[in-house]
Length: 192
Image (cartoon, rainbow, N blue to C red; front, side, top):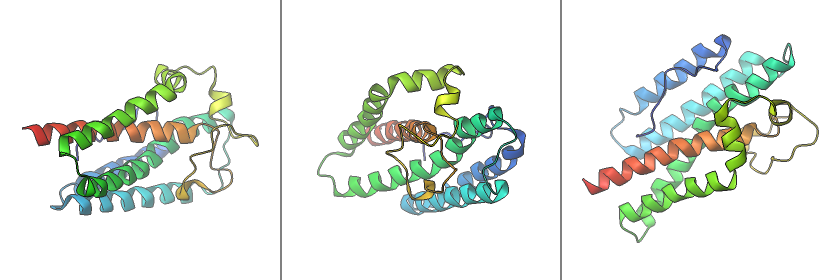
């Protein structure tokens, strides 16, 4: 797998660092499996398992203060759940690549363009997220009854109280960024 796995996330609170580090370590181990689809499947299930462990570790999503809630929905949850989404995207692409009537390079170039389209569509949010600004955090990463960005809730993301309006967009961005890196790896792999 080409997506780089970082050992830590500098914005990850200490109480979640060990579990996140364990997730990354297990993903690295799974990447040693000889068959690509087996690697992807094992990584998907490991990612999902660690998200569930995090939910159990927290119990009810009650936070001591607003800052902890925002950090959780801005950094913690998207880091864990982006791996689930990334391996879902990759699994779907590997299946589609087998069925595609295109050359592998053409297929992966098309997949990489999807990230560019995503970035264009959500450019304002991505610029905000990457800038480390905080002035909109209370709107984007604090739970509310009304949400304006809930169209992409997935099976693992349906529990009440476990979502803010834009944590899913942060997850999608991080997952697609890893996927984009993989697409470029696949392009290089098929041109050398």
